[in-house]
Structure formats: structure tokens, C-alpha cells
Length: 83
Image 1 (cartoon, rainbow, N blue to C red):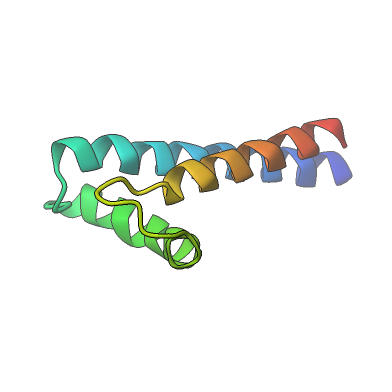
Image 2 (image 1 turned 180 degrees about the vertical axis):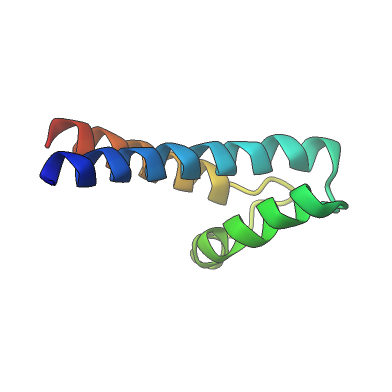
């Protein structure tokens, strides 16, 4: 049972990491997130990015919140792999 939980958490973290990366790449091509899938990606990741964005100082046009979240999720993935 413990192995199932570990694999599930790993899968969840990888899926989250890919969603965040997808949002970053999509923001370069479709910054208004028009369409069903882009809108879903935006609505799924925004609750995670908004608190980070509020804590970071304004940096002009560059949003560093996805980078911070990707690093955080990456660290969590490493911790789960070590457990």
C-alpha cells in the first residue's frame, strides 16, 4: 500500500510539473489562453501561482512565479524519490 501511495504522489507531481511547464509555453503562443484546453490549464494552475506572485516583488513583464513553483515541485519530486 505504501508503494502505491508513493507512485501516486510521484505521478501527481510529474503531472503538475508538466501542467506548469505547459502553461509557461502556452503563454508565449496564446497569452490570453483562448480555447478549452488552454483555459483549463490556466484555471488549474492559477490557484497555485497567484499566492507566489503576491509574495514576489514586481519584476516588470517577467513573471517568476512559474519558475519558483517548478523548482518547488522538482524538490518535492526528489524528496518523494528518496523516501
